[in-house]
Image 1 (tube, rainbow, N blue to C red):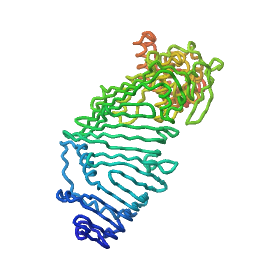
Image 2: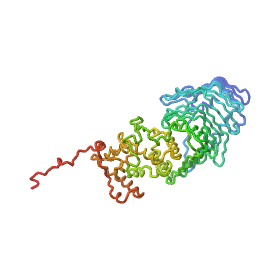
Image 3: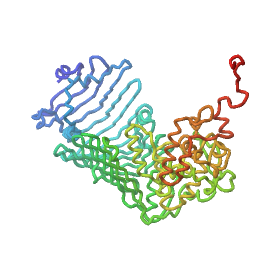
Image 4: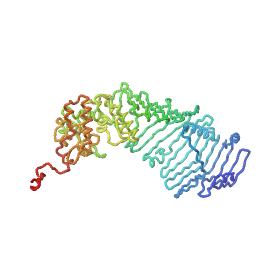
Length: 615
């Protein structure tokens, strides 16, 4: 054996003592595997192995029983890039790739599962197994006092240290190789739970849990398609990432019964899959085809969940405003989406949270009817509060809805959310278009926010762009709009009185005075269209003007676009449309900030030609 190993690998295999106890049983002591150049990779005090004779005829060695005692596997990567383990991998000849033939990951996974289960000994016993990896950037140490597989039962306890992170855990499970069945449960032995290593270094976040159970209950490979079934569950899951939420996202308990299929250019989560998050049960379907073009189908539905259970089941740290909310009736959710990446024009996306005799009986952390009465709105810039604004008639800078120019109301509706007074908080067509645009651009370049969503974001939520904030925003909008908590007119009135229009300029009365020195009721069509144009980027308002205070030529197309839509909708007359010029007259503070060129219109600037030239 030593000669075979040393002939195949650039290493020395040292065996202190070896002897056959019978025809298929061998015992070896004081074994060491040392690469020709590098530190010792493996040392073990004792190995006892009983080989399955039937497998020898297949050209493979599989153990009926395997016992290993006091083993140390030490992998080392040196600063110069050399290591003591890559010699085992060898160098495979590059094989030509047939690009016309699809790669079947289902078959690859099926072969891997079969080989793994076939290699499991009937009896396995490890005592004092130590595995370590050391490099300049990473240090991993695993200590396993014992690992046993006997009569299909798996038992082990281990301690894993990755750099400064230590996890102490226990594993119990069962295995039946003949039926491709395995089930294992990981328990945390420490009160802090089990933390996944390197999540912070690689993704900038953390993931921890108390108990994780996973199982593979069956597999079927037929007609080039692999289908695997199993279950998984987790308790006290805690996830933190600044792009997900400002605080920890926690799920008390969750589980999944999965049915997953893989085939040539095909990946699917079957409709028999069931996901549970606390008391909410959902049934996802995902189908992805990668050839001839990527085609993705996503469907999701949930059972009708009693309202109070629904809110209590939402992950904490995501829907903070509605935590503690209670209600009667129930709630269910449906999602249908189909994306053909070669034909984004026909992308479909339908999302619907549905109430079943649902009524709110108790608000959570936020009173969602707050904006029905006067309230104080806090404006934030760069995450810091800069101004408190009383939204109500007691504030002299508050503009009631009927005192605001109709031109401004129509211009903003045209540019921001034309269907505001008709929809229930969401404009699905605009959202579908934004998805298609973002996919085509391969980055986020367009949103699908309605005025309702912008209002909720400003009044109830932070400005931080996190997944949690967007999900919470959508839920609050649905609750307000579908339960008629606030009228559309009041929502639009509040929106016009709190949105930003410039440097510490909030609300339409402030904006009217800042730019034009007039009241909101006096705004002209041109003035209104300009104000609508800067809502997406109010701090960049000066970019629309030249140094003389004239609107730049590129702004003319926006005036033409918005006024043309307003004309077609009957919001302005043909005469008003024809008379419109892309020009506004700045006044006061805005003029002082925008106009930087010297005034050349006074008589002092008139220069007469010399007399001799006049002659």
